[in-house]
Image (cartoon, rainbow, N blue to C red; front, top):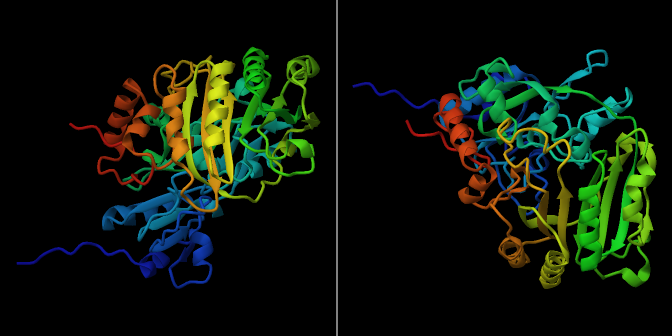
Amino acid sequence: MTTLSQPTFSVPRLRAEVDGEVLGPRDAGYDAARAVRQRTIDRRPAAIVRPVHAGDVSRVVSIARETAVELAVRSGAHSFAGHGVAENGVVLDLSAMKAIQIDTETRMAWVETGLTAGEVTRALGTHGFAIPFGDSASVGVGGLTLGGGVGFLVRKHGLTIDSLLAAELVTADGELRYVDADEESDLFWAIRGGGGNFGVATSFCFRLRPVATVTGGMLLLPATAKTIASFVGAASDAPDELTTIATVLGAAPPQSFIPAEHHGRPVLMAQLVFAGEAGAEQALAPFRALGPLADMIRPQPYPDLYGPEPDGPSVVAANTMFLDALDESVAEAILAHLRQSTAQVAAVQLRVLGGAVARVPSDATAFAHRSRRMIATVAALDTKPGHDDWVRDVPSALHQGERGAFVNFVGDEGGERVREAYPGKTWERLAAIKREYDPENLFRHNHNIQPAHE
């Protein structure tokens, strides 16, 4: 009797079948290549592949399917859960795929998913355009977009996926597919917010937004309950041209732009961006009336908002939720929880939504939280774990309405939290699409949506 052997996975096989670089555990550069932004995560993959074209991606996906090896896909390696690296698996690192084609006449651009938000923003900035990415230059375009994308332009131009016109992705069968609103429209719906569950996105086609000079920068305020509530109220009432990202720090760092008497005390550090042709000073006036400790807001080219990222401790715990109201009592609860933290840095970030986000129907994409007022993210940053108990307690203290989560900010928190990112019929539709395109759940090293049962 003859038995068929399982196809084997090996580094030599990968090197023979792909054009891109393949690193094994014994190769120089392996340790640097396996590192992710979450520095507390230490996993050793069997191989790291850096494809140079979609054909390489297709081959790696096919090999992973044939050999049943764990497959991790990374664009910028920013996942809170460390999904960009798998123990004893193969890492598909897209960072060598950086082609960009800009058409200023049609106001469209094709962008490969190894590019970062900063790289694309700088390239578009020379033409006076932008795509509404996040607020970190080093975040990869791939994961950022697939999860929805919330950044400096969210109230003016919506989520990143609201500018997505089409995509090319390799599905679990190894096929490279073109998807848009007309061609494989269910799959196109799913990748706009459904994460990496449905394939490896190799390139995106985005609608370009005319954004040249903005009025923006950092505003530093003392973090009292009244100031926090007043800031959120002003952000909610602001015109759509103004987007705010406010971070309440439990203790101000000893930096030169912060008055010495406020070092170690709670502060509200906010990024404000006005992306309009006129009316900036009027829109910013309510915030400046709160008595800033430092005001760095100024007219500047949009790409300049993506400055150098600080080198500090890694996020060791985070918890994200949606809030629909924030008054002084909620603000005081936030401050109380920050005081409980023993982490090097304890923070609660508040992103007021509305505007263009809310004008898109909740069922138009897999991002189902269009009507929620703000995203709140609690984070503990440290050089080692063990300072995160207070982070887990915050949702029960601040809980409002239906539980929910923004998937790009979810860590390794279990399946229930993933379900909160995709409530009700959104989950059911995603699971059905998953069954069609990835019935064996090859793409599972992510915030996983399992295929629906027959």
